[in-house]
Length: 132
Image 1 (cartoon, one colour):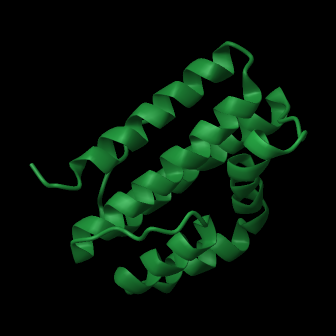
Image 2: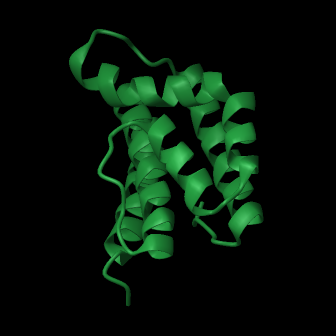
């Protein structure tokens, strides 16, 4: 068992919590948990490659670091093609806690779908599977 496995476990817990909160109609918190699951999964993947995870709270910085560590431009291309999704996901981290923005059911549903697509893309790119 790796010292970084807790990041993988937490990512999975955040993912499951996001789904539960979505079913309960708690869309702001569901969006927040989606963002956390995504960041922790990226931190885990970076960590297993280099031995330590990045301490940033910014999704775009994590994706840039991931691309560098895994030496693949595909990640940056994916990010650029889906920048609106990543911006909405990043908004969930800050706005769901500190601002009055309300995440609608429709938006969170789309975020969840795009998160699944992103996790599947990462699996195809590096071969590491996220349990969705």
